[in-house]
Image (cartoon, rainbow, N blue to C red; front, side, top):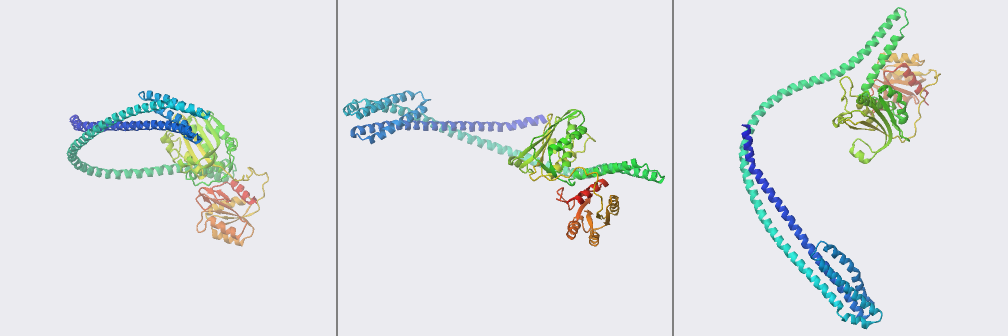
Length: 620
């Protein structure tokens, strides 16, 4: 049945194919005829132009002769001016005629005769003028009367007449051919019109028949659509339920993973604290290992929240003037430990590298993330290259990358000899949670963290990769043009300043307030603590000698930033340190700390608290 339908369809389409083929043949033939007619017209124009050139040559010869005769009759030198102009112009005219005659064997002999006769005529003219100039007017007149010049001019005219006849015959032949072409064009046009008419009539007939078939098919399709619509509604309800289940599963996986890690860390902390309490009740003091275990677990929990904040681009950046070459050199040991002995590391550091203004710890994290990704792409063996260079992204590059601002950048490139990426993978490489690694081998957060940091720093990231050829990822950080900023000393002296100052602690959480106050008192400070901004202003007004305000940022009624502004207005010179566990707040904008803001992220160790307080209190 299907085979019969196919044969019927082929038979029905055969007239259409034949009709279109005939129409195409007619149209093509007409196009060829039109091109031939155009060529004939062009040839006719060339013939006319050629004859005009010959006429111009004859006019020059006549001008030269007229000037010679005027000079012989009058002796006036002014008559030689048209003679000389004509003599100077004749070689150029002959060259033009030669170029037009090169492809015409029929005209070449006639042109040769003209050139010979013209040469004789020019020689006769020049000789008569020379005789006249010597004072031999009689000799000059005898040379003119000899008829030598006239014979040359007659020969020139005869040759030109021959050329004109040849040209006229050629034009007549081409005109006759043009008439034939036009006749064929008329016949072709009529045939084409007839073919179009017949093809249109056939097409209308077929269209009517097929229209009836289409109407029948549409009715059947409408019935099927109604059935399909009912089925789609049923499936959409089922898919909606599945999507909701998938969303809940994704949220469950995320929260489950975080809960798993936090519960493990809390289990260590609780177990260590319980064991320490039991030891202390029995009068035993060997509890240091339990405290170390609890501290380590708490630190890992703080790092986990830091990674989550970095992924969501809410971690504050502390930009500094960075010497990238020195930073990369300082990462050598860390990279060797992270990549293993099978990966060879090569650094290509540019001389005279510009400085950039960015968070150095985040640059290190970005390079380490890229290096670890490269290690996973290479396997156990390979070569990792880290390169730095001064780079200029020009206007043309910025025009093709909408997020890029043209200018000077410090470039850091990390290249590997791994398996490379396809175009599809490169397009998704910076998407959060996208990874090509096996399950439990990668989170898909590394490149998205790099991308977020670079964008927050005003830079640009570009991937270059081909399957089987390895990958290069280039980070562009804006060049720093300002003066070098002073760098704080890396280590404090062995005898730090004694803590004698009074600190006002503002924290709305009573337990956090108590632990912070105890830590400061342990360090030797005098501490006044309150639970709100209003109380803090009252204490500040009632107490003299407060050197530093240590305030949480996220508080009800009056947040930490508003409190600090009011407190500094009332007591100029008051030092302020902000603290919070969540950075989307009043002292962080676009992920970067406000200038001259001192910040300590929760949770912090007593050593970090001591260092921050001394940095701020000792600053001038």
